[in-house]
Amino acid sequence: MRACRAVGCRHRLAVAVLPAVALGLVPTTAHASATGLATPQEAAPAPADRFQAGNSLYQTGDHEGALDAWFGLYEDGFESGELYYNIGNAYFRLGELGRAILFYERARVALPRDESVRTNLELARSLTADQITPLPGFWVPRVVRWAVQLVPRGSLIAILALGYLGLASILLYRLLSTGPPYWTRHAAVAAAALTLVVGTNLLIREFGIGRAERGVILQTEAAVQSAPSDDPSLQLFTIHEGAVVRIGRRSSDWLEIVLEDGKVGWVRTGDLETI
Image (cartoon, rainbow, N blue to C red; front, side, top):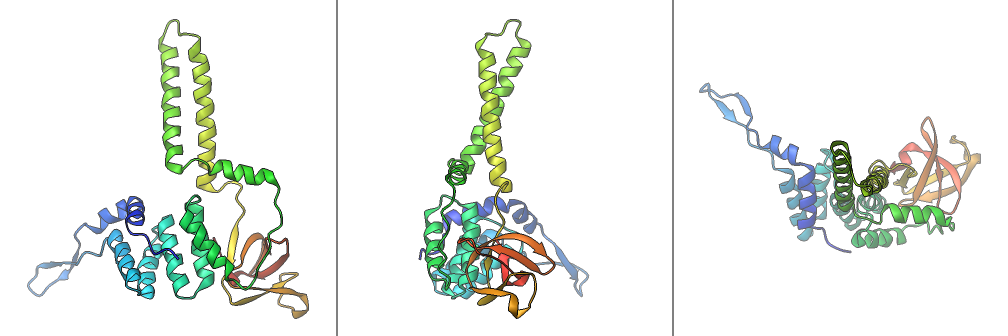
């Protein structure tokens, strides 16, 4: 099990929370004191400092304290793949396998090419009670997912910006020139195609277009019913903590789930949490 990340995680988190850090540094005042002068309120720790505090606690073996620090950031709305990864590590160390897998899965969505996330997720899933053998999938969706995740997000943004600027420059040149060279037409078409393809890829990744909603079972054991009902005669089988399922239809307090081996049934909404 890889330990928590310090530098990389702190950097990514700091980028995500710059507005909150800036607001946290603005002095505030408490109620007036007996002398009639306002007393400055002690500034709350910066998110990056809270994150580093969690790292320090984790390294000393205080996994519960580290989880409190990191999960506090998560509850405050801060997000990063490394934050999810560290929360998953803390839950794993505390023996909460379901929640460890939940946050590892969230980390994998944010960091699809990260080897540490993949390794720890595979380890955690190998320890679950349900050893589910996935059905062989059609090759086309696998190729599409591979192609979408092939280029890192930062590189995609840079390529998109270059394509857009190149297209705008060529169109402006053609507009202002009295006799633009013929090659500029082909260059404009190529730049437009590049911008379209890269922009579409980025939209799919950012908004999860076409990605099935999934969840992780958090109950020690959950009954899977053939219909959204607690009738014992409708129970198909049981599923255990840490199982990853695809979410289908919804009915009041029930969710239809599809397991990786193709089994389908209904569980209570509270039995799982969406990734």
